[in-house]
Length: 144
Image (cartoon, rainbow, N blue to C red; front, side, top):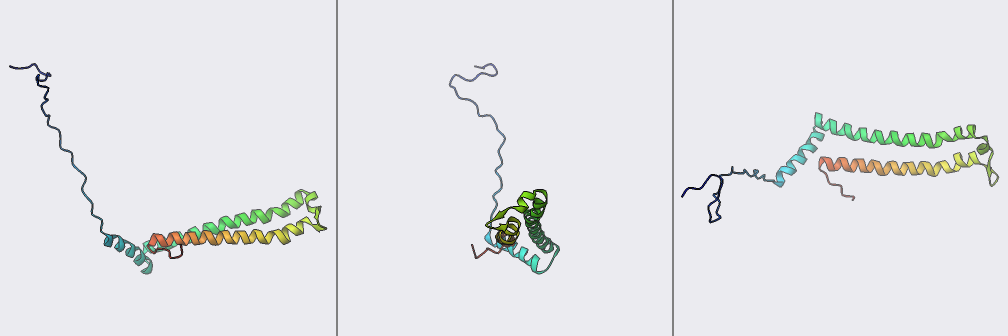
């Protein structure tokens, strides 16, 4: 008995249609020695002073310079704006705290903790840049 096209036999069984075979992705074998070789190669680039090593060093220097310039701008704004404040607001310039003129207190006393704080921030952020560089070239930091 022939059945019309598009209908199924009464037993409910469908014919398995030919489906294209799905290709599985190729397995990748990771060997720890290859990772170590790559890290050694980065260190070797630095010691042999190749173009790649030079680019890595320039990147570190550029990061340190950018940090120093940003913090120098903070110092210039923080301390450099005080004389401008004294000129634009003569009342502030003539104010006294405990008999000492406010400009003297700000420039002679408050400036030093401010500069100390900027130095502390610079040191911490510089160390972070160097730690990231060391991790990039494959030397784990021992001081964490």
